[in-house]
Length: 560
Image (cartoon, rainbow, N blue to C red; front, side, top):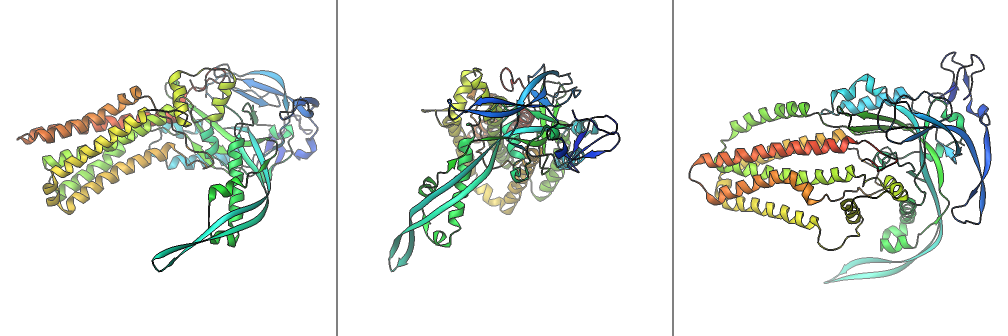
């Protein structure tokens, strides 16, 4: 705790001025003046690379606050009153204990103030039409807390002579002539600052969504930067993301090589080029990066949604669920005018009505399958490699079906999987739709351009709703990692997929039977449309499960 020499209050780091400021008398001090204000110690630590080698590390005393409900821990340098948990969103007094923490290699100070953070989040919410109104209340937005998140950073360098075959092809008469060349180049380069979050409490999808951080603006760490803020505890091993970081470095060196006009001129084997650019890694470094963090409980207090803001750039990522009432009202506002517009242009016959219902059933089937897989992935934290690695290190066993999903996700499973079965079902549904079209070719041709207008209108409305839903809670993530989506067990999928599948089956059977009375066509189409609406509400429910995550249990099983 750093005391103000003017009034005796605690100084707080101010991101706007990059100075320590007294909230009572307004006095400011430079952080550099307090580099050695905190007691620090030098201790011996065994090297991770050589067990026989010990290194001298610098440590400092800090208070570690632990949530009694979820087990999350955050660091503070003074006796900060903690009345709620940043990770499970519970209003609870965190219990402190004194702990000796290792000095990080560096720190990126907060540059965005809390006011900047709240404004960036409000701007994000303005485009989320379906987000619940309670999330836009000032009392909720004010719960943002500044937390320094631990990140592993990796540096690589390469000094390799590259020798690779290049080809150039041209036509000569009736032949394609390919000329082969040998390209040689000395590559000397360095790639610095590949960063990945080192805390199991910080979901990988969120950390990727607010990347990147500019490591070039990092400062030498001093606990004075933590004044008025918190820091998370790093528990992810540095080896976990080293492979990802190396791929980034290889791609960077490859791009440097391809900037050479000679290399751009010829066709190269990209894999062979990357194999020759394998870099030499340096030791991983732990850094603290600034993140504004918000956890909001659901109405039933059983789930939690997160919003994070990059404390350096102001980039926002948020889990935004969909309010069912808003969805219904906006959908009706779109559907009613469209219905009267289409009704003015054409008269829906029994056959056309059934074709449209079958088409929408197939759309609902595909979307439902995607959403169930995403929900299963999120519910079991399969998209969070950091948390998975910590759970494995602690010996926490996953259920067998979850282990199977992880094996399938990483390509380790063999033999027939439910994915093949589901693909078959989708193909069958497409064949059924094709049969509809073939049977009704004369009728469809008679419709001419009106059929195109109808199809375009339906696709536009469905697509607009889906895009709006996805925009409400899905953020484009950094492309450094592949998007993870495990395959949910079929017994879980069928509870959702049975509705659109039955609608497709009903429409197909009606066409095959070809009843004489139109009432059967309209009845089958009406049932199919009811099932489609039901399926779309299932899709919304799956979306909300993804954006309102299970309450975390970091010292037990992650997210369960």
